[in-house]
Image 1 (tube, helix red, strand yellow):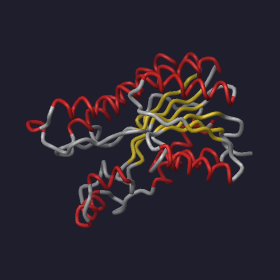
Image 2 (cartoon, one colour):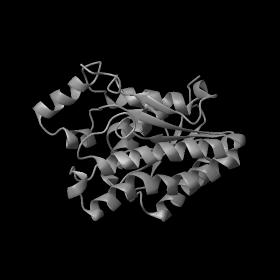
Image 3 (tube, helix red, strand yellow):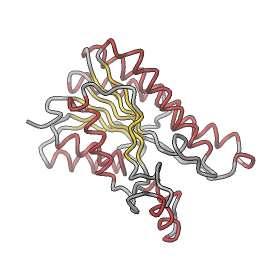
Length: 254
Protein backbone atom coordinates (compact mmCIF):
# COMPACT_ATOMS: atom_id res chain seq x y z
CA UNK A 1 0.00 0.00 0.00
CA UNK A 2 1.22 3.47 -0.85
CA UNK A 3 2.27 5.68 2.08
CA UNK A 4 -0.34 8.42 1.50
CA UNK A 5 -3.17 6.35 0.08
CA UNK A 6 -6.51 8.21 0.30
CA UNK A 7 -4.88 11.26 1.93
CA UNK A 8 -5.50 14.83 0.77
CA UNK A 9 -2.59 17.27 0.74
CA UNK A 10 -2.01 20.95 0.01
CA UNK A 11 1.42 21.92 -1.33
CA UNK A 12 2.28 25.58 -1.82
CA UNK A 13 5.15 26.82 -3.95
CA UNK A 14 4.52 23.76 -6.11
CA UNK A 15 5.55 25.14 -9.50
CA UNK A 16 9.29 24.44 -9.15
CA UNK A 17 11.99 22.95 -6.95
CA UNK A 18 11.17 21.29 -3.65
CA UNK A 19 7.44 22.04 -3.88
CA UNK A 20 7.11 20.47 -7.32
CA UNK A 21 9.10 17.39 -6.34
CA UNK A 22 7.02 17.03 -3.17
CA UNK A 23 3.72 17.27 -5.02
CA UNK A 24 4.81 14.63 -7.54
CA UNK A 25 6.06 12.25 -4.85
CA UNK A 26 2.94 12.66 -2.74
CA UNK A 27 0.77 11.91 -5.78
CA UNK A 28 2.86 8.81 -6.53
CA UNK A 29 2.24 7.71 -2.94
CA UNK A 30 -1.52 7.98 -3.32
CA UNK A 31 -2.35 11.49 -2.13
CA UNK A 32 -4.88 13.75 -3.81
CA UNK A 33 -3.29 17.16 -4.28
CA UNK A 34 -4.26 20.80 -4.13
CA UNK A 35 -1.29 22.77 -5.45
CA UNK A 36 -0.58 26.48 -5.55
CA UNK A 37 2.01 28.95 -6.83
CA UNK A 38 1.98 32.17 -8.82
CA UNK A 39 2.88 30.50 -12.14
CA UNK A 40 -0.38 29.10 -13.48
CA UNK A 41 1.28 27.55 -16.54
CA UNK A 42 3.78 25.60 -14.45
CA UNK A 43 0.96 24.35 -12.22
CA UNK A 44 -1.00 23.19 -15.26
CA UNK A 45 2.03 21.28 -16.50
CA UNK A 46 2.41 19.59 -13.11
CA UNK A 47 -1.28 18.65 -13.05
CA UNK A 48 -0.88 17.05 -16.48
CA UNK A 49 2.08 14.98 -15.24
CA UNK A 50 0.23 13.85 -12.12
CA UNK A 51 -2.91 12.91 -14.03
CA UNK A 52 -0.89 11.10 -16.70
CA UNK A 53 0.35 8.80 -13.94
CA UNK A 54 -3.17 8.18 -12.64
CA UNK A 55 -3.13 10.75 -9.83
CA UNK A 56 -5.64 13.43 -8.90
CA UNK A 57 -4.79 17.09 -8.38
CA UNK A 58 -6.31 20.55 -8.50
CA UNK A 59 -4.40 23.77 -9.09
CA UNK A 60 -5.22 27.16 -7.58
CA UNK A 61 -2.73 29.88 -8.61
CA UNK A 62 -2.22 32.95 -6.45
CA UNK A 63 -0.05 35.07 -4.18
CA UNK A 64 0.68 33.35 -0.86
CA UNK A 65 0.18 36.65 0.99
CA UNK A 66 -3.47 36.77 -0.07
CA UNK A 67 -5.73 35.85 2.87
CA UNK A 68 -8.35 34.67 0.39
CA UNK A 69 -5.93 32.17 -1.17
CA UNK A 70 -5.34 30.47 2.18
CA UNK A 71 -9.05 29.80 2.67
CA UNK A 72 -9.57 28.95 -1.01
CA UNK A 73 -7.01 26.14 -0.98
CA UNK A 74 -8.64 24.54 2.04
CA UNK A 75 -12.07 24.95 0.49
CA UNK A 76 -10.93 23.20 -2.71
CA UNK A 77 -9.46 20.33 -0.65
CA UNK A 78 -12.69 19.92 1.28
CA UNK A 79 -15.15 20.38 -1.58
CA UNK A 80 -13.34 18.39 -4.25
CA UNK A 81 -11.57 15.73 -2.20
CA UNK A 82 -13.55 15.60 1.05
CA UNK A 83 -11.14 17.11 3.58
CA UNK A 84 -7.51 17.80 4.38
CA UNK A 85 -4.87 15.54 5.95
CA UNK A 86 -1.51 17.14 5.08
CA UNK A 87 -0.20 20.60 4.24
CA UNK A 88 3.30 21.48 3.05
CA UNK A 89 3.94 25.22 3.26
CA UNK A 90 6.87 25.65 0.92
CA UNK A 91 6.57 28.87 -1.10
CA UNK A 92 9.36 31.37 -0.45
CA UNK A 93 11.38 34.30 -1.70
CA UNK A 94 15.00 35.20 -0.98
CA UNK A 95 14.73 38.94 -1.49
CA UNK A 96 17.68 41.28 -2.03
CA UNK A 97 20.95 39.88 -0.72
CA UNK A 98 22.28 42.92 1.14
CA UNK A 99 23.87 43.58 4.53
CA UNK A 100 21.48 44.62 7.28
CA UNK A 101 22.75 48.21 7.25
CA UNK A 102 21.98 48.49 3.52
CA UNK A 103 18.69 46.57 3.48
CA UNK A 104 15.55 48.52 2.69
CA UNK A 105 12.48 48.24 4.92
CA UNK A 106 10.52 47.33 1.79
CA UNK A 107 12.71 44.29 1.15
CA UNK A 108 12.41 43.21 4.79
CA UNK A 109 8.62 43.44 4.69
CA UNK A 110 8.44 41.59 1.37
CA UNK A 111 10.50 38.63 2.55
CA UNK A 112 8.84 38.37 5.96
CA UNK A 113 5.43 38.69 4.32
CA UNK A 114 5.99 35.89 1.80
CA UNK A 115 8.04 33.52 3.95
CA UNK A 116 6.52 33.90 7.41
CA UNK A 117 3.28 35.86 7.55
CA UNK A 118 1.82 33.84 4.68
CA UNK A 119 2.71 30.60 6.49
CA UNK A 120 0.84 31.84 9.55
CA UNK A 121 -2.22 32.71 7.44
CA UNK A 122 -2.25 29.40 5.60
CA UNK A 123 -1.50 27.30 8.68
CA UNK A 124 -4.45 28.86 10.52
CA UNK A 125 -6.86 27.73 7.81
CA UNK A 126 -5.16 24.37 7.35
CA UNK A 127 -5.17 23.56 11.06
CA UNK A 128 -8.92 24.11 11.28
CA UNK A 129 -9.47 21.68 8.40
CA UNK A 130 -7.10 19.12 9.93
CA UNK A 131 -8.97 19.40 13.23
CA UNK A 132 -12.14 18.45 11.39
CA UNK A 133 -10.38 15.21 10.42
CA UNK A 134 -9.15 14.62 13.97
CA UNK A 135 -5.52 14.31 12.87
CA UNK A 136 -3.03 15.48 10.29
CA UNK A 137 0.43 16.78 9.47
CA UNK A 138 1.51 20.39 8.96
CA UNK A 139 4.97 20.83 7.45
CA UNK A 140 6.81 24.14 7.15
CA UNK A 141 9.78 24.19 4.76
CA UNK A 142 12.30 26.28 6.68
CA UNK A 143 16.11 26.35 6.27
CA UNK A 144 19.40 25.80 8.05
CA UNK A 145 20.03 29.49 7.31
CA UNK A 146 19.14 31.39 10.46
CA UNK A 147 19.03 28.20 12.53
CA UNK A 148 22.53 26.74 12.50
CA UNK A 149 24.31 29.20 10.18
CA UNK A 150 24.36 32.95 9.68
CA UNK A 151 24.91 33.86 6.02
CA UNK A 152 25.91 37.46 5.25
CA UNK A 153 23.35 39.33 3.20
CA UNK A 154 20.48 37.03 4.15
CA UNK A 155 19.08 38.66 7.29
CA UNK A 156 15.48 38.86 6.10
CA UNK A 157 15.48 35.33 4.74
CA UNK A 158 17.15 33.97 7.88
CA UNK A 159 14.73 35.78 10.19
CA UNK A 160 11.72 34.53 8.25
CA UNK A 161 12.89 30.92 8.21
CA UNK A 162 13.91 30.96 11.89
CA UNK A 163 10.55 32.50 12.75
CA UNK A 164 8.87 29.65 10.93
CA UNK A 165 10.53 27.18 13.30
CA UNK A 166 9.19 29.06 16.31
CA UNK A 167 5.72 29.05 14.77
CA UNK A 168 5.94 25.31 14.11
CA UNK A 169 6.99 24.52 17.69
CA UNK A 170 4.22 26.65 19.16
CA UNK A 171 1.56 25.16 16.91
CA UNK A 172 2.81 21.66 17.72
CA UNK A 173 2.28 22.36 21.41
CA UNK A 174 -1.14 23.89 20.82
CA UNK A 175 -2.49 21.32 18.39
CA UNK A 176 -0.97 18.07 19.62
CA UNK A 177 -4.00 17.14 21.71
CA UNK A 178 -6.08 17.39 18.53
CA UNK A 179 -3.92 14.78 16.82
CA UNK A 180 -2.20 17.32 14.57
CA UNK A 181 1.56 17.09 14.14
CA UNK A 182 3.53 20.21 13.17
CA UNK A 183 7.14 20.09 12.03
CA UNK A 184 9.68 22.27 10.27
CA UNK A 185 11.81 20.75 7.52
CA UNK A 186 15.26 22.36 7.14
CA UNK A 187 16.91 21.61 3.79
CA UNK A 188 20.54 22.34 3.08
CA UNK A 189 21.70 23.72 -0.24
CA UNK A 190 19.37 22.35 -2.91
CA UNK A 191 19.56 22.58 -6.68
CA UNK A 192 16.49 24.76 -7.25
CA UNK A 193 15.79 28.04 -9.06
CA UNK A 194 15.66 29.82 -5.68
CA UNK A 195 18.99 28.31 -4.66
CA UNK A 196 20.55 29.47 -7.90
CA UNK A 197 19.50 33.04 -7.07
CA UNK A 198 21.98 32.87 -4.18
CA UNK A 199 24.71 30.97 -6.05
CA UNK A 200 24.38 32.36 -9.56
CA UNK A 201 27.82 31.45 -10.94
CA UNK A 202 29.75 28.21 -11.29
CA UNK A 203 32.24 29.51 -8.73
CA UNK A 204 29.50 30.36 -6.23
CA UNK A 205 27.86 26.95 -6.67
CA UNK A 206 31.18 25.21 -6.12
CA UNK A 207 31.62 27.20 -2.91
CA UNK A 208 28.17 26.25 -1.64
CA UNK A 209 28.81 22.59 -2.42
CA UNK A 210 32.07 22.75 -0.49
CA UNK A 211 30.27 23.93 2.66
CA UNK A 212 28.44 20.61 2.96
CA UNK A 213 29.95 17.52 4.54
CA UNK A 214 28.71 15.55 1.52
CA UNK A 215 30.34 18.11 -0.82
CA UNK A 216 27.30 18.37 -3.03
CA UNK A 217 23.87 19.95 -3.20
CA UNK A 218 20.63 18.07 -2.63
CA UNK A 219 18.27 17.30 -5.44
CA UNK A 220 14.69 18.45 -4.78
CA UNK A 221 13.54 14.83 -4.75
CA UNK A 222 15.78 14.12 -1.75
CA UNK A 223 14.08 16.85 0.28
CA UNK A 224 10.69 15.65 -0.93
CA UNK A 225 11.40 12.20 0.54
CA UNK A 226 12.00 13.81 3.94
CA UNK A 227 8.69 15.68 3.60
CA UNK A 228 7.03 12.36 2.77
CA UNK A 229 8.35 10.88 6.01
CA UNK A 230 6.94 13.77 8.06
CA UNK A 231 3.61 13.56 6.25
CA UNK A 232 3.22 9.82 6.68
CA UNK A 233 2.39 7.51 9.56
CA UNK A 234 6.09 6.63 9.67
CA UNK A 235 6.41 9.90 11.64
CA UNK A 236 3.35 9.32 13.84
CA UNK A 237 5.21 10.33 17.04
CA UNK A 238 7.20 13.19 15.51
CA UNK A 239 6.03 16.72 16.23
CA UNK A 240 7.59 20.05 17.10
CA UNK A 241 10.87 19.21 15.41
CA UNK A 242 13.29 21.24 13.33
CA UNK A 243 14.38 18.39 11.07
CA UNK A 244 17.70 19.02 9.34
CA UNK A 245 18.09 17.47 5.89
CA UNK A 246 21.17 19.48 5.08
CA UNK A 247 23.95 17.22 3.86
CA UNK A 248 25.99 18.10 6.95
CA UNK A 249 26.32 21.80 6.20
CA UNK A 250 25.45 22.57 9.84
CA UNK A 251 28.35 20.52 11.20
CA UNK A 252 30.96 20.75 8.44
CA UNK A 253 34.09 22.81 9.03
CA UNK A 254 36.13 21.50 6.11
